[in-house]
Length: 292
Ligand SMILES: NC(=O)C1=CN([C@@H]2O[C@H](COP(=O)(O)OP(=O)(O)OC[C@H]3O[C@@H](n4cnc5c(N)ncnc54)[C@H](OP(=O)(O)O)[C@@H]3O)[C@@H](O)[C@H]2O)C=CC1
Ligand SMILES: Cc1cn([C@H]2C[C@H](O)[C@@H](COP(=O)(O)OP(=O)(O)O[C@H]3O[C@@H](C)C(=O)[C@@H](O)[C@H]3O)O2)c(=O)[nH]c1=O
Ligand SMILES: [Mg+2]
Image (tube, helix red, strand yellow):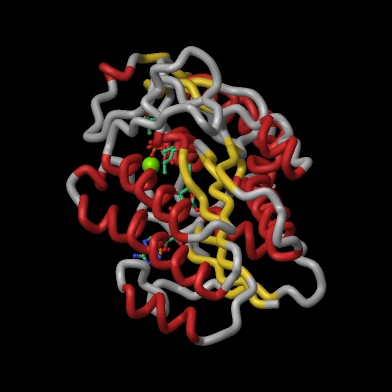
């Protein structure tokens, strides 16, 4: 059984390829040179190459601030490519599992966001990802849209590695925003959930379809997350820095970000029996992988 993965060189794509897939499952993760998501003909060429059993759509334009000016490219990769992948997978009668983001939400809710809460992205990245969600929802009834958040891992570029790099380059104190709250998520944990959902959808035509949240359990502000990163790093003799809690206003960025984008995960537990572990447990593992 052949499964197509987009974004194979990214954090999530890398961890998908590290999963222990059952015997007979082959993952294909073409590099950008072979599958440019901004190129509809390239997408059709890759789809025509094999009788795919499923598509895992994890490729995306993820530079949140740059997207504010590279609007067309962000929409091509995050909305038009998923639209075509959804349509083509539907034509073939195969499922698509599409990865989306907490940044589709405006962040004004008090508690945790549920799957059916109204979206309202604050920036181009979130808006283009919301466009991708709609295209997948309307393009292929056999879909799972998995919204995740604050993804980190030992590879690729992410907040965990940025914090360790800044501390490692000698910064003693870092100002980090404390008025944005969300759910840190480890790419390996997300990849395991994506694998489960994909195999369920492939094996059973009446597996639950729809939109689901997957994040690690617990929540944090970016400042709190940074403190936990430095504590875990220091315990292993790695770099650490003092965290100065600052406000979003004190850290101006081109894109607006939600103040609260915590995601509730009851639905994926009820539908697929997936129960995420606390992010603190996953953090220890990731830091250990970076500082063996
Ligand atoms: N990172 C995060 O914090 C979060 C991510 N998500 C979502 O999770 C998914 C995976 O994210 P993650 O792995 O962290 O992202 P990364 O930024 O680590 O990886 C993005 C991947 O998309 C690929 N890509 C980007 N543009 C193109 C293009 N034009 N053609 C082909 N490939 C392209 C990149 O390829 P290349 O290596 O060639 O650039 C890379 O493989 C995405 O859908 C993202 O929106 C959701 C919430 C949080
Ligand atoms: C580096 C740095 C960032 N920050 C702030 C900026 C921002 O509000 C927050 C996190 O910074 P980042 O650039 O890692 O955040 P960002 O790129 O917005 O991360 C997002 O990426 C996309 C792809 C998603 O889908 C989201 O779930 C989320 O993970 O921390 C500081 O306050 N101090 C710092 O030194
Ligand atoms: Mg970023």
